[in-house]
Length: 262
Image 1 (tube, rainbow, N blue to C red):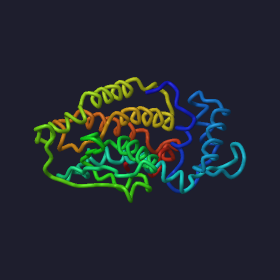
Image 2: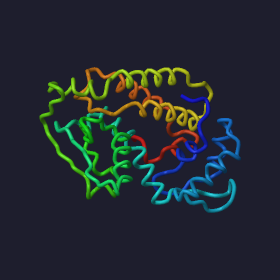
Image 3: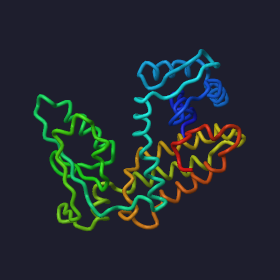
């Protein structure tokens, strides 16, 4: 968990999926966390310039809300959060199929190829062979729109990789468990190090910041393909208990409203 929440993270945490939020609340939470008004104003201007939020009114008397573009970006960013908790609840079981993804675009459309490779890796797919990626998830809905005419996909329940056919062995080879386990060990330490006396809103922000760091190193492989019991799932349950304990007091329901499990 970082000692300082970034102003951008602070703003985005307060933005509901639909509706607006008072800037007075954002500034008040920032000040409690030791963030001055000026960095918040600068982060807000950048979000407005990027077309991701709209502001009405000035200063603390104003309100902000997501634009369609901003909502789409945050929705993609938070897919990992929803998937993690769905897997923990047994609501996102593996369907038994591996998805193979490739792109066949001419050199004149190199930008499309580069965007595809960047996005498919960021979504957790792993290189499988030259120009070919594999994942246990269906990612086609999240790939760049321009990739569609050049996309090559296949689904198979039977995958062999250098003589390995066992799904858990394939997963360990392509997505080794150790980096993920280390990331969640850091999350456990962050949970234990939560400062006492924080308001519910500030406490949730610190918890969210710590979870985000752990998820960066988690490809969210389906539970069936990891050893049981899977340690990160237990850490997320402890995290969720703390999150729920801070909910419903002093406006805490305004933080990540509509984004995290109810």
